[in-house]
Image 1 (cartoon, rainbow, N blue to C red):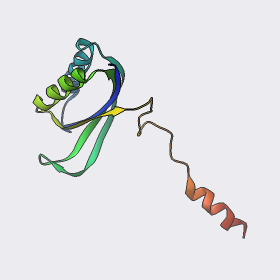
Image 2 (image 1 turned 180 degrees about the vertical axis):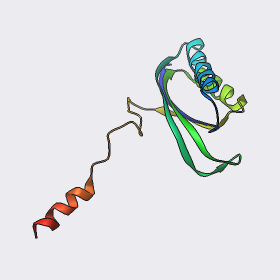
Image 3 (image 1 turned 90 degrees about the vertical axis):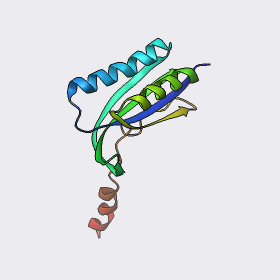
Length: 121
């Protein structure tokens, strides 16, 4: 049964472009060989981690949105687990079509709204 999944994985921060391209190509190959449908693969860039993981304080985040079956996700997670460059990953099954949280709508400027009535007084 085809289901919607999103996977976020964190890789070591000091990887060069060739290593990042090889890793993303490997992820795309897993989805393609397991007859999945790759919807989106975004590089969210370097971010500070909430706590050190394997002595890393920063990591490069990647967002993967794909459609497929449980076997595809099992194989993808197996490959991510075996790759030393990947320090964390998590896959979530989506119930309905959603957008990426970081790439979603920008936050409304609530501070500007709160200042308007004060300025009128």
